[in-house]
Image (cartoon, rainbow, N blue to C red):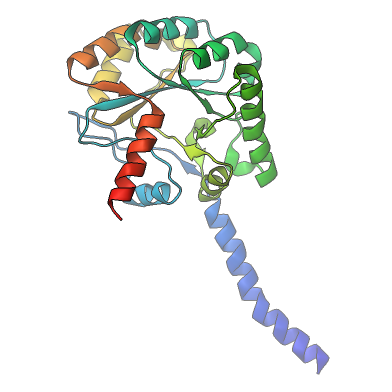
Length: 266
């Protein structure tokens, strides 16, 4: 009798165990960020399924498509000698930006990180070791984020760090959920191009033209500070977009607008 009950219990629980395993695997299935590029100022699109997934975790990749606002972001994996010049241009043009930094960048370019903070820019988390976050444990993911946050706070005196850009744009529902639990908002992008290959720079016109042909209202630009092309084109990009009626805003501005819009729906 006991054997029969044990067998019945096992048969009852097995389907649930497989369901839970399948659900966990689905939740951590890696997603490589990708979009339908913008053209003629028609905003980029990630598609309804991704839009709905990001919305569940308060993540975003663009702003209001009816407003000519732009959000400038940079990924900083390592220093290549151009970030100082980029900061000079931003200061000259009074433009805010967000810099997503890694542990390597923080250790090797602390003066530049301090300057970013002192000049009012947002510092975001790009993880300490730049791993595929879908392939690390929950504890390792939390450690990757907390190490960057605490080291940045010690350097700048500013404890708050609320924006995360996953390395290589790889994420999952699990990483979205964990990051949100840790107080982070995932920030993706609606405008990007191949700009990180330092041995294949093509000139400032290449960067300028790629930005101008993809620009759209609400664009979140992703640029890499290792690019000489980006650095040389940045001032012209900013000035010409201002002439076209665009306003450069911070990620805090974008997040606040999203909160206001959400409250207006209810």
